[in-house]
Amino acid sequence: MINGERLIERPLRWGMVGGGRTGQVGYKHRTGALRDGTYKLICGAFDLDAARGRDFGVKLGVEADRCYADYKELIAKETAREDGVEVVSIATPNFTHYEITKACLEAGLHVICEKPLFFTVEECDEVAKLAEEKGLIVGVTYGFTGHPLVLQMAAMVKKGMLGDIRIVDMQYTHGFNAGDDVGAGEALKWRTNPTTAGPTFVLGDIGTHLYYLSEVVLPHLKIERLLCDRKAFIPTRAPLEDHATVLMHYDNGARGRLWVSSVNAGNMGSQRYRFVGSKASVEWSDAHPDQLIYEVQGEPNRILHHGMPYLEEESLVADRMGALHTEGLGDSWSNIYLWIAQAIDAKNRGDEAFLKTHHYPGIKAGTEGVRWLENCVSSADAGSAWVDFK
Ligand code: NAI
Image (cartoon, rainbow, N blue to C red):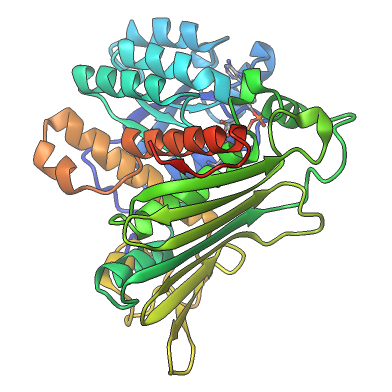
């Protein structure tokens, strides 16, 4: 169980690019990072609007002269200081991730970047090589996968409690974009423009969460072939999609089905995962994150609760609130940030043995998300044809 005790020697000096006052995801980063004494927020280029960014940063407790106009100034001024920033989180629109990540790594700074990591696998490979050469960590904020019941599902699969995996069924949908884009806010505008969003809208925006979580639960399964059908129900969003279904064939013969949509009018269900094996199934949704449905064929169905001693050790060590008290998204983000802090700390100490077995969403997780998107797009562009997963 995690109780806030600091698990690394000293707090990492942390800065943020983006995630300003009007940003949607910035507070999730701060909620995750500022929980266990592993990070201290000392600087930022929080906003495209420099004055608003400075005002915001000061209200977060950052010194005014360390609230910078942009990431270039942040890197230049912070790397000139002895007590300068060590790790930078990037919570900006997709098209900026590659450029800012590269600049930080080149300056010797660890990076924690939003998903989808970059636009192409080629960019991911280049940055992975750079990080390796520089001895730096790139973490990726797949924020939901720190939940103890996600780890419970992974542990149950590993123990063989479900039997052979046969069916993977995942959904991340909402209806917030069911209407047209007249008067759309900034966050929707950049998401529906290929220049700023990249090759996908909802597939990258929410589908990559599903895909990474399935990789955490089913690390032994690899996709062999995939078919993606995508559509923009609001035509101004084309060529990007506001709705997609993806069918997947795995190398063990399992079948997968994934649905992402931002035009599922009225839906507030968010994410749902069902993993079906030859003996039993598990089902988890972030709408009811404290409960894991466990169904064994021929037996009464069970609901497992987070924090209970009957869960696997892998789940219990990541629990924060204890049974009976809600454990949610903020707790999950805290785990993600903690695991990345431990990775950075180990890298700084040269502890490669620790890194070999330490679980956290790193550059490989980010790259695999981008690879999955590339395959989805090539299938969709070929008229929703089956494509071999490359
Ligand atoms: P947003 O449009 O709501 O906010 C972007 C923020 O970045 C704003 O504060 C803006 O002023 C600032 N910004 C933009 N360009 C900048 C630059 N060059 N330098 C400094 N600041 C800059 O976007 P949102 O929804 O917060 O998304 C940001 C990223 O986070 C995207 O990559 C998105 O896919 C990801 N995201 C991830 C989530 C998760 O659960 N992991 C949830 C929501 C978004």
